[in-house]
Length: 121
Image 1 (tube, rainbow, N blue to C red):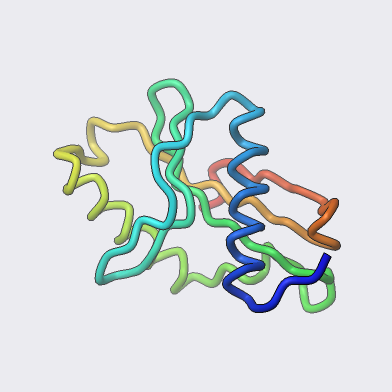
Image 2 (cartoon, rainbow, N blue to C red; image 1 turned 45 degrees about the vertical axis):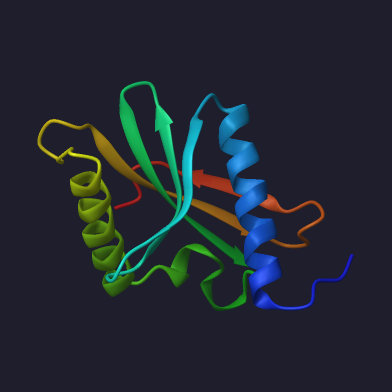
């Protein structure tokens, strides 16, 4: 299989991640929530907990693989974006259980290695 650009690859990685999480019992609420601060790839729900998911794909584990691609500034952007998502839905972090997970996909996208890091930051 051949993908034309990084957008196609990103969409495929998000589909794989969403399907993986659904198989683990999570419910998909939204994809690619975007606001002025940033974007959250997937927003899922696990029982009462909102799960903000960053999906990272790397073909190779050279240079630290997918996990090392999430910098502190990226984490801060994700947290601010999540706060805006909560506000938009009349929720807040004080009375809504939330966490940030990472789905790291590595290798060939036709059969990637998938790692799910819960409470990643």
